[in-house]
View 1 (cartoon, rainbow, N blue to C red):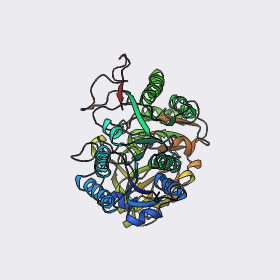
View 2 (cartoon, helix red, strand yellow; view 1 turned 60 degrees about the vertical axis):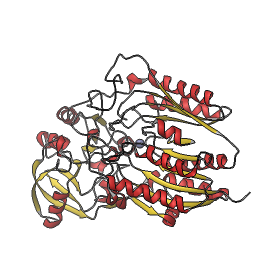
View 3 (tube, rainbow, N blue to C red; view 1 turned 45 degrees about the vertical axis):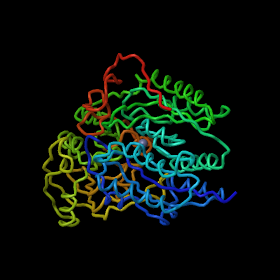
View 4 (cartoon, rainbow, N blue to C red; view 1 turned 30 degrees about the vertical axis):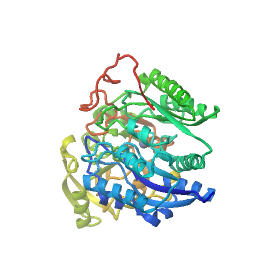
Length: 497
Ligand SMILES: [Zn+2]
């Protein structure tokens, strides 16, 4: 039998239908954007893992293109057309392939397309025909649609949140693809969705979080005969797409009925824990007041609503305003994306004074700027390296500055970036462990960044496109009932297979 030829591509972005900045080709160029043989140099993420597994098997890799970025608003029509064309034209040019592996996020949206992953998988399926296996990796915050399940042979979700396992997920997916391509297995897949739409605040896969318990339940099924893969999805709640929901997806070897029934068990377990997914919230004013009463620090102000990793612009000053009103001489670290003010700081130079309207300019619907005067403490080009499980990945805030207002250090960046640990603060010389307050603009990763040193964390109720609860969220395409909007609704599922 001739050597297997496996095509590999990546299109990985989480989009926010309610805010943030449009995602265009420049956005990808600042993160990961590779074409053809340059894809082969990738060592991190799902692509890095998939490449390793395919090479180890002796199969040939056909590199397509690879585009990954921090979350943002929907892709522009041009940007998605570019990614789609580059991916498909290379697949066309490759001639015979024995399998296709795509590293996807699963919660992208694109202007005029709606669900681009569904569109891309359908287009790939049309080109390779019904018998060539198509396997995709997904973030566990994917919006898994009926089209994605039907066009792909296997969808393999991340197992961890915080997301530490993109690479092993790529390896697992590639091994599954290779087995299917060689005829050793015949994957059959079912997802059972229930309309639970919550933020990710209580959705860690570590410890005793409700999501962690259901994930362990799902993963234990993988030891059963003929179960190839189980996944659990919490739909990215800042989408406005029809049919949003969460639940289990199971792939079995040739047994669609058992795949459906096991996925149903996972989803029923998820439903039974839904009441634990909603967080307790604090106003910024109350959180700062309560935080000041706590001995020592740091106290974490979790401004989840302005999460760049969920597609927000990162330009809110809701927490900063509360800190300035309560006690500007209390040491605090606050990130704010504001290219104008970053530029003003660079023009003023280190030691210079800057008076400016700060915040709420990139996505102004969520608040108004505040007038501040501060001293420029530090200037950088905004480039940094991620640490821990994301080591080897680079971040780019664009020209950045530390603007000190009283004792509050504001990290003013030009571009939004994904929060993993405290890399952005460290890169500009700020030491979070010395602050009384740290503003963390993410719903989860603050736990791994500051869990070891934090005295307390308050989940804030502030305006923004990635709020900590979606109970009252103005979806236009999601049909009722859904939880928690319709708190007393009866259990209902959609089975996709
Ligand atoms: Zn995610």
